[in-house]
Length: 88
Image 1 (spheres, rainbow, N blue to C red):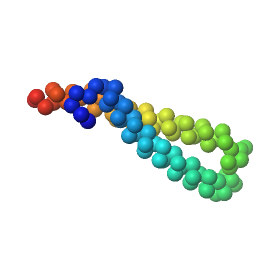
Image 2: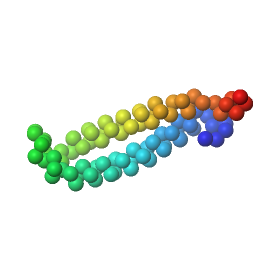
Image 3: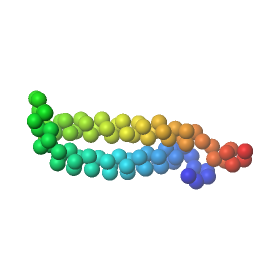
Image 4: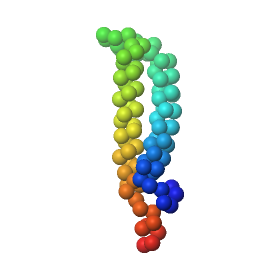
């Protein structure tokens, strides 16, 4: 983090880094889910194993939870004033 960065820049940096991890996990998770559909097809009661609404809903839920967790964990850094920390 650079000295003199404003709060929006810090939050943008935190969310950009979180989005990279979330998107990598999304890609790996969808690939694994599609490969594992044969294993769960017998357990799916009222839906097909490759039901697109299930994939979309689960994906959106996990993306939202991940980004909220990134914001929550980045809040202390967001409130940090680097200049004051260096002066002390």
